[in-house]
Amino acid sequence: MKELTVERAGPLALVQDGGRFGVRHLGVTQGGAMDPVSMGWANWLLGNDPGAAALEISLGGLTLRAGADGWLALSGADLDARLDDEPLSRNAAFAIRAGQRLSFGHPVKGVRAYLAVAGGIAGSPTLGSLACVVREGLGGADGEGRALAQGDVIRWQGDTDSPRQLPNEIRMPLDMPPELALIQGAQSDYFAAASLFDAFNSDWQVDSRADRMGIRLRGPQLDCRLSGMVSEGIPLGAVQVPADGQPIVLMNDRQTVGGYPRLGALSPLACARLAQCAPGERVRMLPTTPERAREAWRRQLKCW
Amino acid sequence: MTPRIETVSMDSLIVRLFDHIDERHMPWLMAAERALRQALQEVLIDLVPSYTTLLVHIDATRLSLAEARRRVAAALEGLAPLEQAEGRHHIIPVWYDHSVGPELGRIAERAGIDCDELIRRHSGRDYCVFALGFAPGYGFMGLVEEALATPRLQTPRQRVPKGSVAIAERQTAVYPMRSPGGWNLIGRTAVELFDRDSDGYSLLRPGDRVRFEAVDRDTFVTAGGDPTPLEERAS
Image (cartoon, rainbow over all chains, first blue to last red; front, side, top):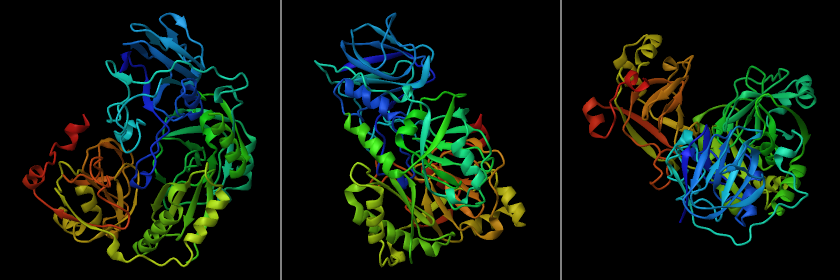
């Protein structure tokens, strides 16, 4: 068994995988990597399944020390990652030797970096998944839903003799324009025509109130004539508009049911893109159809 | 019964059966849940019933949303309500006390009754589980009688202790684990609502029926309840 020990925890580092499914009717949220595309590539570089458990490191600040030689891969945000003092390339696999320190500094670009380990992080799945949801006390390496803390140990067993290189033509979510494909639906018919126009023709600014449950956007006030909705199940990426007219995109750790009107939902690729937007960044929403969103998603999955 | 089937995301549909909350809807909702699970099987990722609707999350790598819509519509043809007997009946013992249920007094005062009467009335009827959500194993139950209906707290608490029994508007619930929360607290139970090691994980399921039973402090503690008053926990 190979090990990485946490020397310094940083603001938020979590074990994540593709998410927890089949239990949402019990009130258990989906969880999983906020940017599954970047995590998928980090895993691909090591020959892992795209949903293999990896570390999601938000905003840097994490320092790990290797207990053994092994292969790792890094993707997603540029958090000034260094191996000892040498800067590491993003979107590449690298070897680490026992005793070496892997550290993350301040975010340079993007929000969430993914650190994959050969074969995926080891641990006993909770309700079918290692996805760590702090609010629910589920998942993570020890099953208790804890964010990484000083002294914690990440273990893995796998090895690789031929890490891959990212094909040149591949662009990561972080490198795409922040144009978020939205599938209109749910209560969108109840929004004022001017609000629907504004939704797709305005700049939206990512608010500082952004976490794994939801990301608020600031812009023109959207008016919906529906009030007093009965709570219903909420899909990933749902764009909900509470009474203040400012949308909230509901992400991986969202509550399973909710009672605010929704414009529709972002596509999975748009969610991955938004997960890398820092507060203050400007995004646009573009209308798409379920068919086009599905084609784009299937093209992504085919890469792996 | 002609359900509306609505697009809500790339890979999810909402099946809308009704437009308002009524416990007589639950047998229909449970019948739809069963029919959809049987019809969709391996292409179903998650199915979330809630009051009047079901969210159907399908595997977009296996089928298109248009195809899913056809299969959902076919599965719901000729839908008939499930018998009430399908749901289970639970007795949940509650220690109703000011120290663990600080809003007991407020609700009683609004209703113009004393606390003993409030406890008698809250525990004096069966509640229907309409939906699970908010947290793992958190069941939205109702309806609480009109006189006891109380709006949520203006400022939600950062930490509501595990097992807290609460009222919001005409609904009642038990917090399965410590979490933030804005409902009015009236007591505490030692019953485990969510146990990852038990079969099925959640004590409650939509369509179940629940009756609360008032117990004293000793009974609550003997059953494994934590009697720490709310104020001490909050600090």
